[in-house]
Length: 179
Ligand code: CUA
Image 1 (cartoon, rainbow, N blue to C red):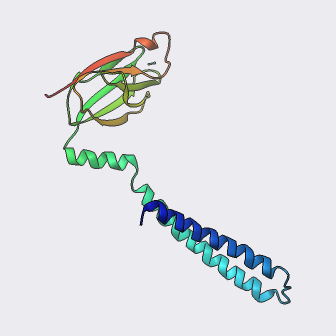
Image 2: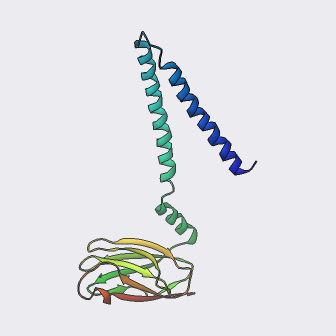
Image 3: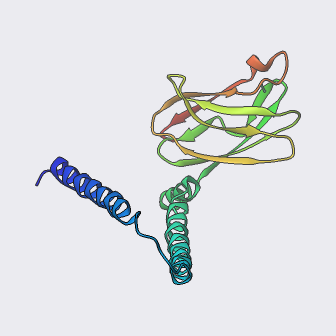
């Protein structure tokens, strides 16, 4: 059975369910209920059950989806590939200081990014000037990003946050190669 056909059958069945629900309500709407107390009790019990079903469904859905946060995926990646190469990066008005200007291709690199003065934006661009990773450079904080470079070449670090008159001068370079 083709997938389209299965989808079509399923939606047909669901539509039939909804339609029969409407018909049931329409047929029974004329009848008057004399004693509401047992009906109300039944409804409350149903509501409590529904509440716990929703807690169970959404609770487990939340746990299931939170397991796959990107941060987790990154750290698993790191564990497989061995210890990262560490590059300390500091932003100044108006330049970048990198502890290394050469990293190895195909191995994770950990950038520890901070600022000596104001907020800067730390953006890494590949040889085609596509942004491959970024974080904020903030005074008093060290933000960590990890990236594995798969292509050799000269990469650029640009400032992504306006930080004064020479903001555009904040360009640094580093090489990615087989070390
Ligand atoms: Cu530093 Cu803009």
